[in-house]
Amino acid sequence: MIATLVQGRDLWQTVVASVVAGIGVTFAFSIGIWGAGQFVELSRNERPVAASVAGVIGALALLCVAAAVIVGIVVMTHK
Amino acid sequence: MDNDLILVIVVATALAFDFTNGFHDTANVVATSISTGAARPSVAIGFAAALNFVGAFISISVAATVAKDVVDAEVITPTIVFAGLIGAIAWNLVTWYFGLPSSSSHALIGGVVGSAVAAVGFDAILAEGLVGKVLIPAVVAPILAFLVAGVAIGIAYRVVGKQRPGIVTRGYRYGQIVSGGLLALAHGTNDAQKTMGVITLALIAGGKLGADADPPTWVIASAATAIALGTYSGGWRIIKTTGTRIIKMDAAQGFSAQGAGAAVILASTHFGFPLSTTHVINGGVMGSGAAKRLSAVRWGVAGNILVAWLLTLPAAAAIGALTYGFTRIFGSGALGPILVTLMALSLVAAAFARRAQRGAPVTAAGG
Image 1: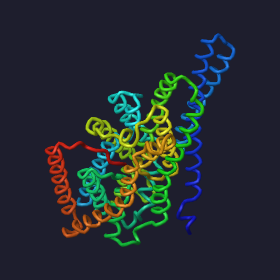
Image 2: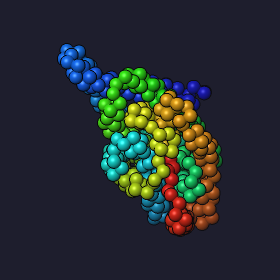
Image 3: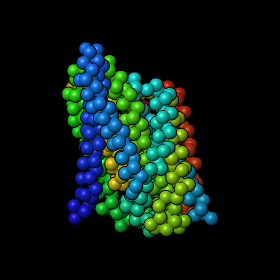
Image 4: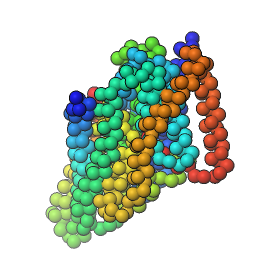
């Protein structure tokens, strides 16, 4: 009875989706900023290879953020 | 004829409620972006209004919950829905006048439940839907936003902690364009759907739609327009905002608070949970503040929100029930709703005039 009332499965999925999206997107975006910061810093110190690696990591992280936003909106519109 | 007239009054009242919901909530949606300097107020408000409009079109799960899972549509009449809406609007007006925090969403559900109980008795209430889809998520969602924002900002500070402050601040400010946009989209989709759900419930009750019908396109479009116009208008009046009322935040905190709020509201909307978006956004803001320094959060605001939780549902339900009782004095026709509408309009005008005379600031209530 209680389990039915609480809509356990839907609520649990809401919690999981919120945690994954809320924390995951902030983490990925922070990696993007870290990558950009490292790229600038390492380029200044004339370390082009390390700067490029940091830049690529940052860019990939920002792509992940963009993908997460798009997937989220697509999921919302398909129910 | 009377039935059609009552339906017209219900639709107009519901759209007015939707407008006030957007008006009240503008601050909650845009405050974080403005307070961290991520966007100029005019840009943030215009952006939020546009995304509120778009958000209203991306889902109908919450509308279905409000129309079909809270009260039994088969025993509801348009007058009951009307009385519920008046209960919600009256409670929002009372709390706005006295500067108390409120939740438009809880007021709406409370008003409809109260008028339904007054008209039909407790048999009209679908306990499973009311508890499982409204009351439990209402408690869980703000706490979830608080925790998600708190963990997210902790991780963000660890990742970017050794970077130059300039690039970090600029980066998160750009990010807030996305997170603020998502929050506005989330607000539009959850809050506009409550109005869609109420109008659909009235149309089902009035025999214009089948019991399992989804909101018609005109209902979706009009609810989207009303909340967007309310959001755009509200931005220019509301001067006390969520971001600065609860904590003074940096851009990273703003990003994590908005991201957590958007994630919780969008996920909840997907499963059809009608939330108080204000409570969720405030939960995210407090979480991002508490993770940095517990004393940075103005916990009195959190206490006010708790009071709003406890008071709004029963108070709006009581006003909804009284309104229904009053309309019944004049029979089951349109006379009762017409009289109540005229009285309500007079009270709204008087409250605005008195408030304007006192020169007090318009404060943010919630949705």
